[in-house]
Image (cartoon, rainbow, N blue to C red; front, side, top):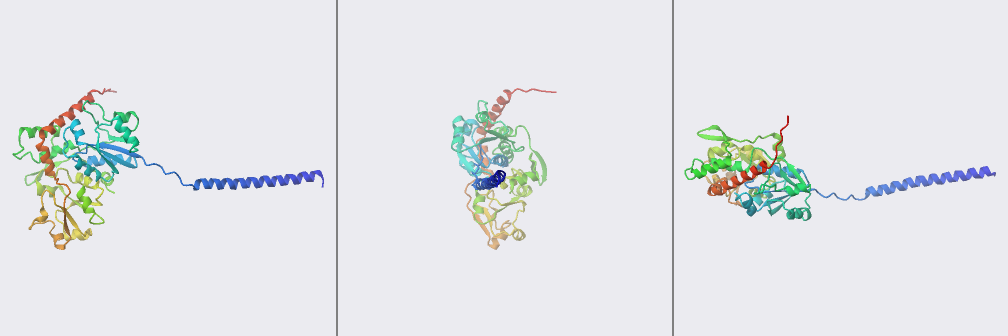
Length: 388
């Protein structure tokens, strides 16, 4: 064989070797690549957000704030401000800490609750939130939260870039609810005094509630709250409810119409209208479904339609109508042997809250004046620029 033949054979062998190496390299590369993607991925740490507040006389505005805060992360940690801190910065709370803790813990968007939180985000507490509670962001509404000296309670969180803001729920506030409650007692001689009238003016901010003639001498308030189907759905998906839920697999909560409540409890009841009360109940983690506008009496047809196996009532209520011999709204479930009375864990009703407010009218009046003064100082310190 000539030199050309030897050279040609060597070239072919080299080509086969290179081809084999390339193919083998590709296979090897793909195998390593497959092994790499087969390895378990490192789990992403959940984003934890923090929101604090007084949550005094918990209402659907508070619940909506917690819902919005939860949407900004994976886990929501809520700080409930201590009684002492509220007294120092705003005045006495209507509901004490242990009651506020129960109400906040029952909201379905809350994952964890911190008791005795400070009113202001101090550097020490902020570091504790970041290091011990692994908080990523601190959340608050777009309404100002001011200290007695007029400074922003969240200034430090904003400075370090760990602050996020949500929209305040319009149409409701604790101050507004106090004003509504005071309407319930304005005609009673025991509280129809100059001091009571002054307290009512302080909490109403000079805006009188509109009213409609409900007939039979009653007067039904028109709330500033505007319900939408989207808001109801957002809320869909109290301790007595937790106890009731423990008796079965599904808790159906009936909420009476405004007319039913007014007929039984007076013209200035309910304090919150049907939609407002529905949102408050829907926010509770123990309620599976709500009947909006439930009839005053539990009928056989209602029990059959909703496949109800047990009807429950608490021992603490505005009136113990379940004990009536005549006109008992629970006569049907009682006769069927499916009615149960639960011991209410807290001795609180609407009337209880009203009595607290009226008995401490001077303290609450000073609280409202202090809040107004702080807000005035805050806005006076801001400049306003007008443009064309």
